[in-house]
Length: 103
Image 1: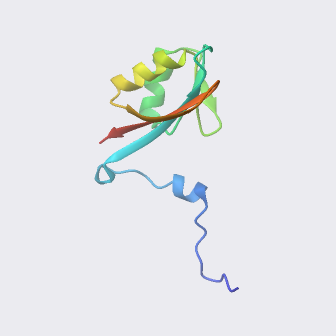
Image 2 (image 1 turned 90 degrees about the vertical axis):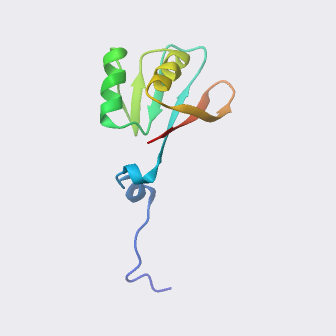
């Protein structure tokens, strides 16, 4: 099979596409346990990361996201104040919530 001229569409390339207002919706994910005092959020913009890091001191960068030093419910409520709504969740002990914000 000849692959000359084909484009590499790896997830890394797709994740770097900048979002514009024309896109209409932004999705993020938050992963955590209801029994823990920290969680991780993936897909936030720089301004949102700064806002959460200011609200929750001690937060820091993790692979592809940010670790928030707060329980997951408080973090979900804070993301709700930024305009995000939960659209799905999966898991038992450790849960991943998918959120969206219409822009």
